[in-house]
Length: 135
Image (cartoon, rainbow, N blue to C red):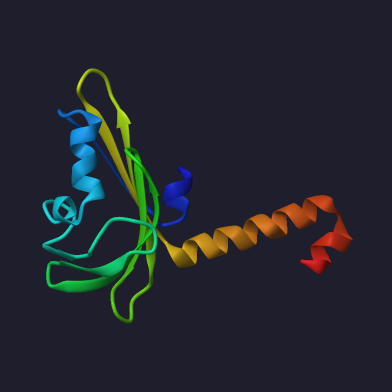
């Protein structure tokens, strides 16, 4: 089992017959995201701290852009009202001549918190009983 599966993450990967800069426009612009990510994207820009909403299959989600690595990666958080927030990472890599590999991973925030706590406890336990008690 891979880490993303243990965390309850959803991972999708596809190879597109287009250069990365062309695909980047579909990730880095709200209009581009609206062509494939959701039915409706209400977001002024794809930049760290930008927030808005997306609607997919009638479900409204609040969205915040967390991080942008120009030409390669966008990380965002989103959450349906009353739902559990998730982190979504969209990553682009070159895959041969004029092709782009797109990887999308969505991880529930709660799963990330649990994994962080487990890591802290394992690290403290490895340092000895006194450190494990302090954690």
